[in-house]
Length: 153
Image (cartoon, rainbow, N blue to C red; front, side, top):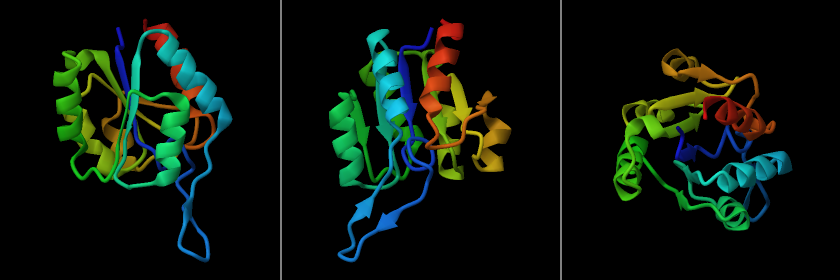
């Protein structure tokens, strides 16, 4: 049974592109269908949050909008953050699902029972993932994740 879902941001909640304006502001595009699916996952009593290697005001705003349980940014070692979350929520690894897209997400394998890679993820991540999703990053990944969680539960 999944009790905690952790997602990367860039390349999962977004398509991985970064937009910089003339004043240096960074813009991200989020899919509204992900928001609906994330709320449905949370309504199942599952904790949900983001662990990202980048800092972003846009991500923090989206996390606040969706009422995420946590939003950790500027993370170099995702396994370490997941280990702390696992301890904080007192969960075994097999109740944690991580969704990623790039090689910096590979370390999550150490601390989660299920590792999903988006369809356009780095090959290194796909090789160690339990599931490679049919959906690309930023294209409503969490609609598919929600469906898989229902099947898994």
